[in-house]
Image 1: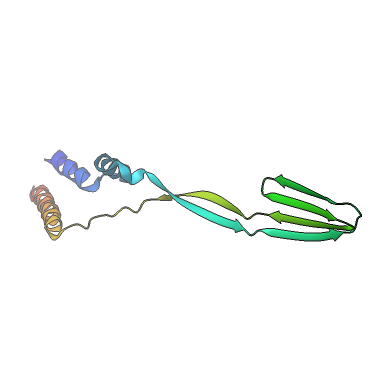
Image 2 (image 1 turned 180 degrees about the vertical axis):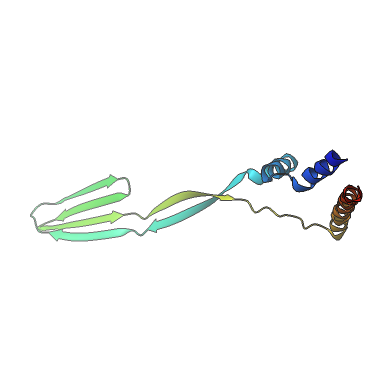
Length: 138
């Protein structure tokens, strides 16, 4: 009878670890440990740049230079040199990935579940009380 009291006391004082509960939760829904990634696209528009300059010479000619977004046009008229330079606008798109933990919603314990667990604990306490009382009667 003494070993039964010790066994029931051990059962009452031991509980499941948090690791065990986590393992059970992951078995039910493996998505709770997954990390999601938020993708943010940042767009920066660089405005066009125009530059004009004049140099004086005595020849006639036109030169156009184009490279990537830059266009330079040099026009020589008599003793005047007209330089038109234009850099087209550019769009820079930057993608940023930000990992974050998903929000896990935990359902609250219903009233019926609370009543069941309370009844189980009261039953075990009553059983333990009876065993202890039998020990003191001897």
